[in-house]
Amino acid sequence: MNHDHNIDKQKLISAFKSNSETQSKQEEQQEINDSDTSQGRFQETSSGKWPTSWSQQFFVLLRRDVKERKYESFSGLRIGQVLVVALMSGLLWYKSDMSHLQDQIGLLFFITGFWGFFPLFQAIFTFPQELMMLEKERSSGMYRLSSYFISRMVADLPMELVLPTIFLLITYFMAGLKATMINFFQTLFSLLLNVLVAQGLGLALGAVVLDQKSATTLASVIMLCFLLAGGFYVQNVPKFIAWVKYISISYYTYQLFIGSQYHSGETYPCSSGQCPIEEFPPIKQMGFDMNGQGLAAMALVIMLIGYRLIAYIALMRIGVTKKKA
Image (cartoon, rainbow, N blue to C red; front, side, top):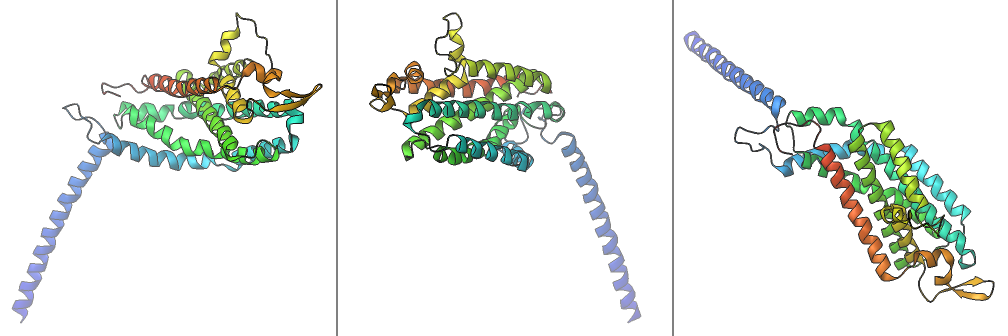
């Protein structure tokens, strides 16, 4: 009986030693794998191919971007700022109508300006704040620049569009703008397009300059020039400087806003009774024919793509390695 007990004991000791050696080897191998992963998880192999697919990199970076950005985009301070401006705008323009046409047009241009500056200055800080991280991760070959850039754009998209939608829902109906679904969604589409283009300009400036103070100063000058050439403050612009409006985000957005609210055949109260709305000076100068509306929307779409393309090209110089972006 004791003999059998000793045999069992020796078997257990042998099994324990065997399992310990196996586990030790597995741990050593895991440490080697972890070390290799930490040093170059996304690095290229000797054949020049990425060890992970573009989609894998995209979804990993997308999850990280959403986690990082959701608190910033929906911070109490930012939400409070938008709500206060929306309520104040709705109260100042409360139940305006055709008898106060100039006031309504002023509101449309104010929305153009506010939602030009707001997303612009939010986007300017995106790449300068991530400069050190981007340099380190790109130089180590962790991911493609394209996967990083697209994931950032996709992560920002819903976050950047929620607040302007809430703003318009509050201001639009308080201010007495046309309460029809078609007019509202035309105005909303114009606003969201304006936000995306202004955000693209901010991304481009931040990527090109990479210094927050310099980029902010440059953005202020550019956006103020766009507002001045937007068609609200000055209708009779000298020909030698009139070209500025054709690169102005505000000009095209303002034109879309006008077309979303007013249509040929409508009238407004004037000194002679009722006058055609297309004869009202600010509207006459901008126009609201379908061709003009289509060109304005097309111009903004080109800017939306163009500004982001500039930002992408500017980022290619950061953390440059032998690997392709």
